[in-house]
Length: 117
Ligand SMILES: [Zn+2]
Image (cartoon, rainbow, N blue to C red; front, side, top):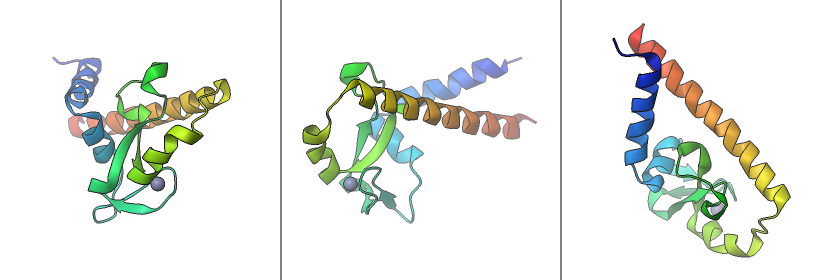
């Protein structure tokens, strides 16, 4: 008998196999192949999107879905300049990340419940 927690770990483990770009693309909702940039809000094709770490890797942000967002290549290039990386920014990022993680976990739980009930 497989325990619920083990199933969740399995699902999370499968995610870890994907590159973080694939993960971000998969997680994002697309409108017929158009993806919305989390920064500027404009829509682009997948090839023009980059995965961005909400909490930077340099600050301990991981490759999990909750820490990834899709942004366009233009925003990704111009990010360096405007990313002040202050304590306030980090708190904001971590809060956003925690919310996304809860959303992801809820989606996974709902999916598993539906599949096994
Ligand atoms: Zn953009």
